[in-house]
Length: 492
Image 1 (cartoon, rainbow, N blue to C red):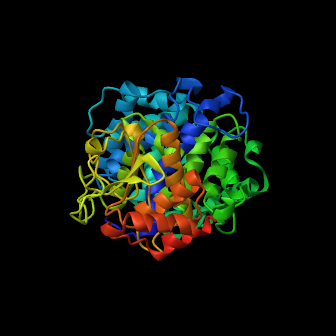
Image 2 (cartoon, rainbow, N blue to C red):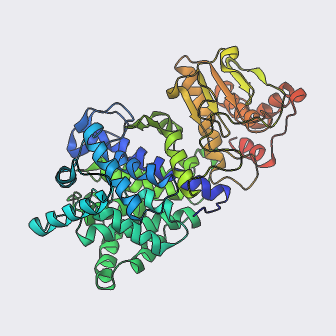
Image 3 (cartoon, rainbow, N blue to C red):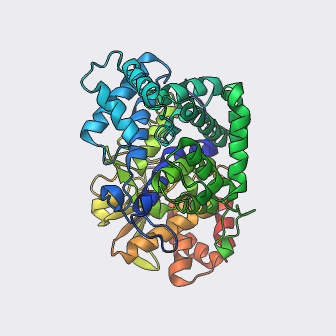
């Protein structure tokens, strides 16, 4: 079912898969202490799968297997959808798994070679048989991948609970694994729609009554202890507790203070740091935490440096994870202009912009009409929605998209997103790239971020930098909105 979301809710929905992938890639180097954690965690790569920096592991790979089905608009409870998810799991095991848990590998191995029709039921039965034989099927492997289920059923928590448990049961038949997926998915659903973490408690209402008190006790224990208290986080309950502890016990700034470079959404970054510091299965705990943190803070609250680095199986980068998330919430359909998923976004004006930044001739200010080849750039920072092939001649790793809406009140993290955009231009320039900085028309977001860049590079005040942009772009229709002006000036 298609669910209409406002701009801020859309931002939060877009942050779910991306947040999980960022947590995953951040935790990869430290999984089971493959590398000593010195200072804050970094996306260094390595780990158990010899990953590239920013590459996500099996946690996000399996989430993608679900998201590819969810993005078609399918009801994930149906046999057809479960068959396709099961097929994706089997294909992933054969063709793309860089790492795989013992329990998941055993179940998928049992159904290898079976036909697609009925594969979901066969896989569920294989998982049930493993549970009957061993009694130990409560690993964290279904919780780590569950986030897309929440996006597929944002409109109905009961449907969500059914889907979360059915998909968990494909490989993890222990009821505790299903409970954990239900609780976490409800927390994600609530965070996307309401912008709070209160869904952790309301999720208890969606699991069988006989286990609610026990789960309430486990959640309270997570509030009382730091993440590294739950070291046995290969067990699904401990993994959830470690992730929830990292989120709940990480301080959240009361308000943005741009002049001091303090932002409320710093909670996203610091929460993931805490999740990685839980130790042991670091990528999984951080992926679990990242999905809920992304649902709360949105794409605009995720550091752009991480968004630029994240990639993995399926050839997916940040824009692809965002696309799958938003198609899922849209019932498998793009919006009226074809986004996300279109090759090109059409510009709102017919006047191209290609103006050199007054403080740096290696930065080109532009709009959706700007030709990357003609302008000679090899890196792009987009402040608006772009098509999948909008800048086909620029390497994918040098394309960064910023969630920044040109409408006062329509952004969850205006100051952070604007500052991150300017700092990404700084980073790309320091790497030697010539950078195109653009929005749709080049009239509001582009000069606002261009002004912030002047503050960082040339030491301008906000008012002076904005005045510089106004003079430069006077003939192009300089129209920086009131919120963006106030944010630029607030940086001091």
